[in-house]
Image (cartoon, rainbow, N blue to C red):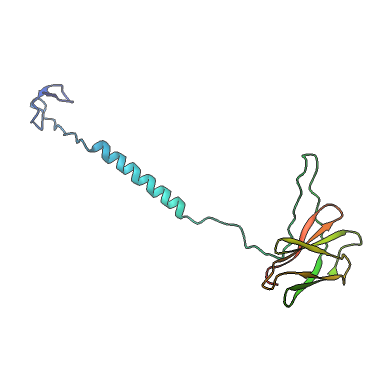
Length: 168
């Protein structure tokens, strides 16, 4: 026997309405909890798909020739050295089969502001360039293309990439 939820009268198991108050008795489905869980899972999957498919703003375009400040580890008391605002113009050319010619053409830096120009070819230290306009050097690379990087060291401790060419 079932009990009517409205009036509390006894109702036989096969009846769909209460004989006392005529309330319609709803049959509970055994699948209802499973349907609720399935709907929740579908909603979660849709939300995750929308989040994953939405565009994400990435970093701007990388310009390989732009100066980059690199800093050595320091204590909390030290401050970052400021990069000088002067410019350094370097040209590079390949001298077949495997040499690379670099020359410091111009600079707007004051005398003594640049302490060194370090040359790296394919990630390995290849030597240094002089710090005065007109200074140049020939460095050994590979017979294929070379990645050439020149880093300036400044008197205040700052470092900056002043020349980069991945196709020499």
